[in-house]
Length: 122
Image (cartoon, rainbow, N blue to C red):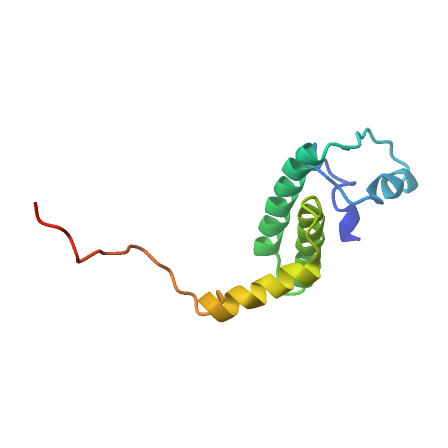
């Protein structure tokens, strides 16, 4: 089971884990040490690191693993957004609004520079 992938080997710790991971570790016959973060400002930092971790895992995943890693990244983003009181429906609506105004990211356009040809001569 991939959610236990760090149990048989030493994962990079400390890190934010899903809520059921301590129970799963205990069920595997191992012990654990945890703290619970209640300060929203501190939680934002842990969630930001989790999003980066999940993005890295998504990028390294093979085709079969992509869905699982995308789901992990999605769950981490939902938790991060909820710290600001944002929900998926309003985020999706804002994304649609911005897509209509500015487009999406699907064409792969990389902007390298903007040249202002209207330079004023002194």
